[in-house]
Image (cartoon, rainbow, N blue to C red; front, top):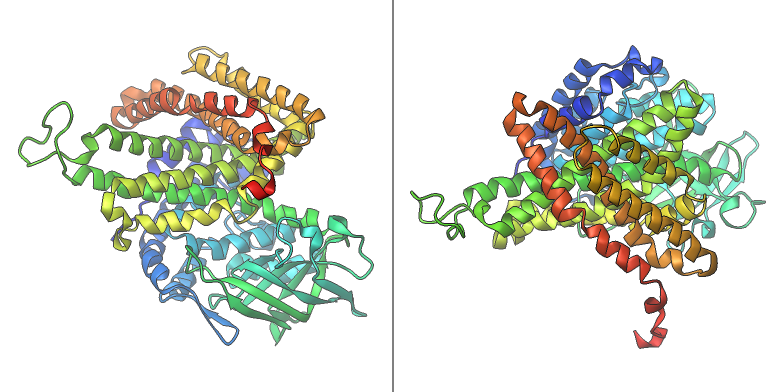
Length: 590
């Protein structure tokens, strides 16, 4: 049976040695009294125990059994309910929540490490609390004080869960087409009527209540996205004293039968005149919901890293133990009939690709978490502004690049197992199935790429991008920076290509859509190069302290810069080829 062990040594390396997180937290007053390096390490240690010992053992059995629907009720697989009860005792749902309402107030840099552990251990289990954390974020940012005081404490405790109800059968990406209605009532509430699909955790048996955040339109709402409002709709109504009352007019019509994440209930939710309360301003619900959606996009990106890490751990163990054939250079394990497959160049190529992309992703997720912490907690307006711009630029990259490359890594891991990778009990095929959805939900990766290039690069004249590339250039021109020349060349290519695309978009309406996916990947590889250069510099300075760990970092950095970063050359060439070849066929010729 596959195991999962949180990569604590590498997480500490990223937090404390690459980013000096303790120093950052010490200068942010809101965090200085809450967390330091020792506190962070203690939290990570406990999180590793919870994910490795409690949650990971349910991964395969949960996949085999799946979530079950009967008479509008959903039951989670055997062991989930008991594990969830233990899980919430540790306060994990409210790890980065607002302390005013019972959250722990931990920084996002720390939370992203925990989320990676959770997804690596069991993606289906992780989703139930991930949606709750995102819903809490939207409520805390936009709801009235009355709603915050009533709903946030039990949600942070994990006694109540949250869901995000956007998609309708006819309206996925184009939310302006939604038909769910909200009718004002005399008491200030609203009657919500409509149906939503693909609702993660819309119904389950883990919590006392489920708080649905629902997009709907008021009777006099403008057409399109500008006419969308956001409503809080509990499964069970809540009395003024916080106690549970009558059941609301909300029901689960069915659950989907899926390729992966089978233990996560993906629901059709029906609202039949359900009571709901407005969050934020009328007709401005999409902006409020994006607070949650952007959190979920980073979280789902981290699902790609977590699954890739789990696949890497299993593939590494298998490659060290499985013996097949001799090394090209001659026998290595001379006392055995054959050598372990880790001696073979192609197996090493796959393992190193997994290691380089997963560790690069972990560092990049921490970088985005750092910017989120600065945007939220910094007392300097200019620092908050720049951090917000970087978060807006890099969130679609994190979501799409983490998950695209996460699937690649899981496929590598499966391939290393050979025929056993296709067999269920080894666990690798489940990871491939589970991670595949991450490229689709919370905004497909194609939509993320359109958002990045269309809105964040071309739409604002590249202001945020220049902020990011200026930071990389500044770093690369310091003394003793590893791979400075390669990094500067990559940044120059990114900037030149971005300028060229802005020119193309001015007269070609297909320029952005034709180039955006390759562009997002190119930016992702450059961002990883920046983080690998930073990691290599630390490893150079500390190599003598732990040659095994830091030597592995330096060797993996060398692999990244020599074998993976050059992919930007083909991506650049593909982008500069333009859009004409995409439109050489008429629709009927496909």
